[in-house]
Picture: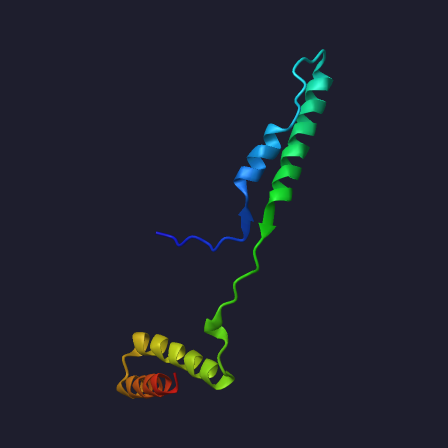
Length: 108
């Protein structure tokens, strides 16, 4: 299961609907060029109506990475030690990993 992205736009669908209801669409066409022109005009008006009722939301900033540099380095070292421990299973690496994990718990 994938997580949904946070919304980046907010659309007022009732205003969009009312804007579309006000559009005048010519119903009889005599040639294919008129159909193409009307389709192009309709597309542009729908896009303009959507743009008019949609507001862009500010990007959400992640507070997760607003950490002091020494904590960022400690987290990187912990990740490296976890990878190394998974490959080597060396007791010295495990002690060092446990030590840095404990330091991070106390710091946070």
